[in-house]
Structures are given as structure tokens and as C-alpha cells.
Length: 354
Image 1 (tube, rainbow, N blue to C red):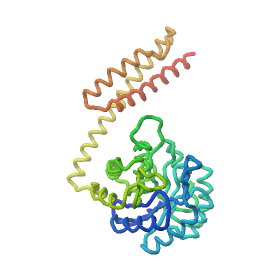
Image 2: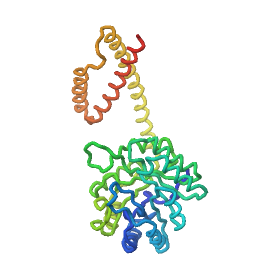
Image 3: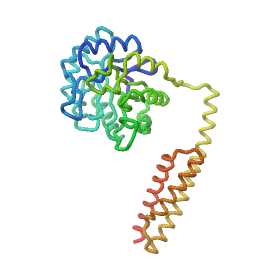
Image 4: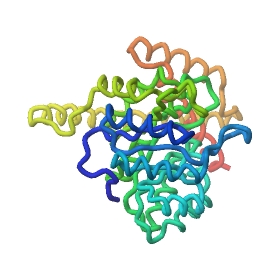
């Protein structure tokens, strides 16, 4: 895969309003961003897929000439979201430079394939947001479908995932998912969309910094010259001046290491490798003990799940982890993975003995 933004400064900044509302709104916002934020591309939502039908759903194709004027006036690439083949056709007719596929579309392979078919022979760059749901395979599938259409300039946008638990985020980041995507596609540029992760402007700096710490290619951030008047997602948009200030306060990581730093890191990684091998041995030995317990339970007709024992394990190990400075949630998640495997091993052992 080829990079959409070659030889660009780091981070690459893509910004603009959630929705294209008026020609004046686009022009004022674009002018502020380009003058203040070293912008690489200007974004705006033309078609807005909303949950409720009476919400503002964008101006549609009549806003495309406005973006053409922005592109001509400021000599900057423009990008919009597309959700079907008709959107792609409109975008191509109006010289849109980059397309992006939104989370509500990525979740549907039929829609992604329709877009891929419409893209054949165009070579236009495409950015693909993660699906609403926490499903890496859907994200990978969308990337593969667009790549097979012949669009080799592809990037991914991490915008968080819907979750039903209490969270300060509009969409929970689950950073391990874009990290795994990067492992699968080392040459793929990944951007972060902190606006949709946060859902509010207060959390934008910390999420943006986290993305920079992970060496993401850049940020896609929603900006409006007057966020309080925005017709959609007002709470998560910031002014161009506010964006300029936030970007100036971010700390950007070095892309390369000095020889001394590299040697030190390699020594620490070697120690981690040794510990990881020990962990594998410890887990293997623990599961062997679990198998023996399962054999005894089966022989004595005792249920595999012993709830009181499981509660005691959770309580004592979580306390121990806290004493060592480990997160309670981390210890709990780790124990639940081990417990799930322990139950599986015992049940399979019982089945095999019959």
C-alpha cells in the first residue's frame, strides 16, 4: 500500500467541520485552519448518516462546489465521506482529492463492495474508518476490498468503538485494535480521529497525545469557526485557534533512535523475552494442574465451575496486583482469560474421558 501523504511533516493534520453547512462557514473555517494549523487536507461531511431521521443529514451534493472553491482558493486537497456508489460518482465529478469511508459503512461488506466497484479504475486515495463494532476482521475486510479495486493509496482512521459500559468516551478507543491492524499491515498509515473517540473537546488533547505516542501518521480533527452554532456534533468541534494551541502543546516522538538508546532498548527487550518464556512455562504448568483437578472432579462427579473458588481467586489476586502497582482491571482481565481457558480444559477433559 502507498502512503496518501508522502514526505509530509509529522503529524499530518486533516481538519474541517463535521458538516458542510454553508459556503461561508466552509470558507471561514478553512481560512482559519490553513493560516494557523499547517493543514494537509480539508475535510467536511457532505452526506451525514445520522441515527435519527430528523437530525441534520448534510447539504448533500449542492455543497460539493463549495469544496471545489476551497480547493482552488487555498490550493489544498479536500476530502469527504462516501457511503455508496452515487456518492463516489458525485465526488469524482467535483474533483474531490481523497475519500473516506465512515464507521457505519465499514461495518457492512455489501456497502464497502459497492464503493469498491465504483472506484475501479480511478486510483483516488481512500481512508477507511474502523467499524462501529469492535471487530478487526471487518476493518481488515474493508481495506482488502478497497485495495482489490485498484485503489492502492489507502489509510486507516481509528475513531473508536461503540461500547455499552460507562465510559468517558463517546467511542472507546481500544488501542490494541489499531495496534494489531498496524502489525498486519506495516506499510499502512493510521490516523486517529480524536473527535469521534472523545465526543467532547475536553478530552481531545489527551487522546491526540496518546495517538502521537503510538506514532500514528496524523490526526483527523473536526473544527468549526463557531462550534456552538454547528448543526451537528457541536460538543466535539473546536475552533482553528483552539486547534493551533492544542497542536503546539503536543509532544512528538522521534522516529529513529541513537545507537546508545537502541542498545539499551534491545537489552531490556531481551530481558522481556526471557520473562515471556517463563510466563509461558508457568501458564503451561498451571494448566497441567487444572487438568488433574478436572480429572478428579469428573471422577467424583463434581461440577467444573466452583463459584466460591473463582471469587476467592479474583479477590486475592486483584489485591496482590494492587500491592504491586498493577491496574485492577488489567489483573481482572488477565485472570478471566486464564479462567476461561481453565474451564475449557476441564470440560474437554471430561468429554474425552466419556
